[in-house]
Amino acid sequence: MVIPRESAAKKLISVVQLGTIDCATGLCLQQRLVELRKEGRIGDVLLLLEHTPVITLGRNAKSKNILASPELLAQRGVEVFECDRGGDVTFHGPGQIVGYPIFDLRGFATSDGKRKTLGAIEYVRKLEEVLIRTCVDFGVSANPIPGLTGVWTAGPCRGGSSTRPDGAEPRPHTEQQTAKIAAIGVHISRAVTSHGFALNVNTDLSYFDLIVPCGLESKPVTSMAKELGKQLPLQEVARSISRNFSVVFDRQILWLESLDTLLSETIGVPMRPPAELRKIHGDDDTTWA
Image (tube, rainbow, N blue to C red; front, side, top):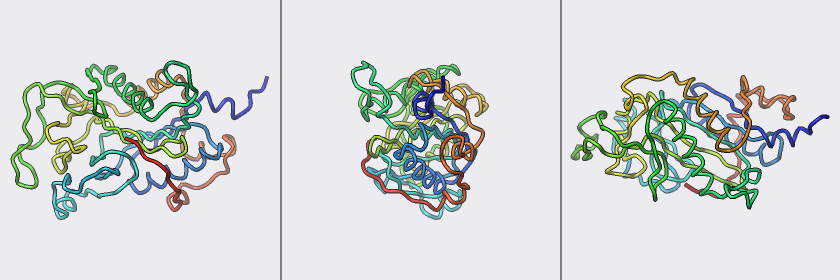
C-alpha cells in the first residue's frame, strides 16, 4: 500500500544540519520555510546550526541589557539583530547549538490527548523537556524553573569574567547558584513555529558578559562543557537533540543531507538554490516566549 505523501509527512520531523551561518541568513531561511509549511508544501522541519557571534533582541528586549559599547562589539566581531521572537536579549555563537523548529502545531496532540493542536505554553514546555533530556544524556543535571523560560542547572559557577563592560560591579554569584544552560524564544504565526532554542555546549561564555542574558541580572549562564569540565562533540549533542525530539514530540526523525534535499521534488517542493532563499522575506502574525 502506498502511503500518501502528506500523511507520511505528518509522522516525521525532517532534520537538516546547516553548519555555521550568519543570523541574517538564518532569519530569511526561516521565513521562507514558514511560508512553505503554511502552504503544506513541506512537513515539519528542525534546523540545527551554529551562528556567527550575534546578539539578538526579542520583542520584549530592553536596549539597556546590552552592556557593551558598539566599539567593543565591533572589536569582538559581534553583530546585533532585532527579531520577532519572544524574550529579551541573548547571545548566539560558535560552540552553541541553535535549533529552529518549523512545526505546524495543529498536527501535534496535547499531552492529555484531548486536542490535536499544541498551545504555545505546552510547546515551549516540550522544548524544555527535549533540552533537559539532552543534558541528562551527557551527565548534566538540568531542570526548568517555574515562572521562567529555558533550562537551568545548579552547580559551581566558575566561568565568565570578573568585570562588566560597563564598568559596574560584577554580577553576584554563589558557589551553588542556578545557571542558565539553554535559552528559548519562539514565534508562532497561524500555528506554525519559528525561532526556537539555543543550547550552550562548548560556548565561550565570556560573550554573555556583553549583555544581561534574557534580562535576568542575577542569573549567570553556563554550558555543558563548563559543567563537565571538557569539550563535547557537537555532532553527538545534535544527534541526542534529534532523538529527544522524537520521544517528546512522538515523531520519527528523518535526517536530510542538505537543505537542497528538503526542497527537492522528492519532498514535493521545487528546487531553489540557498542563495535565493536569503533574499526572500515573509509576513509575521504573533509572538510568544
